[in-house]
Length: 283
Image (cartoon, rainbow, N blue to C red; front, top):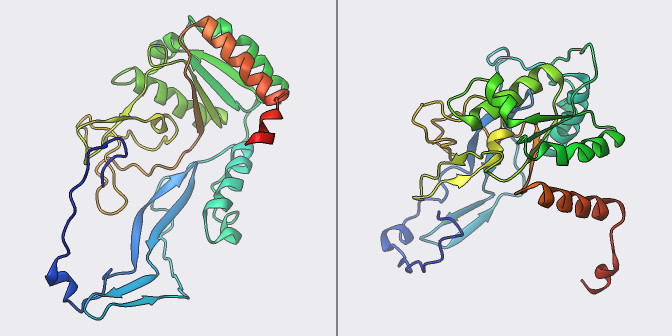
């Protein structure tokens, strides 16, 4: 596996005669488990299924047309995440789109708790320099029915613990998810305003910016404490105990300054409310 950004040509690998003269089936096991995880309190287990079986010696390819799966689970093995009613309703609909056993989703859902006040739907993370330019955007979201709060990064850094500013922002999101019913987070600003976390790639000398770090809120993304965040593969390599399931939904507005912010939001609002659809005639 190599990143798509690596454009250098890859030399052709000649077929191995030992492999192609073998009568051993490939793959040896049709089912590969994917590390289980949690999406906003819903425990999920996954697998990779290859419905083909190939015997190199004879060239015979078999297709499995029917597969039966049996899954076992153990109750009370993991901490239970309680959700607000709004969080549960919101996430449950998404879970049903992900899983095969949709009829079991409500039965297996985490417990709920009530808040004294309204649930926090959206938090906008930005710098103090950009915050005034985002007030109208907060009002726009409120008119659409989303209870929204602007959190300046300077306030976050002063209130929340963390090894660096990115972790402080994530800890703030974890707190509001657990105590206020948070569902969405908007990172309003480029990295000079709202820092990013880079995820570790074991097959590349480069780490990649990964705002999923602010969305997948389980653990620390660095369980082995080596400062290489998000070490993971779908099979047998997961030293940081990440599951890559979003607990809240995240988006970033790549804004440089207040003027850029006002212009971006004006265009975005126009596109959402009064889009020019003439271009669709020539798509």
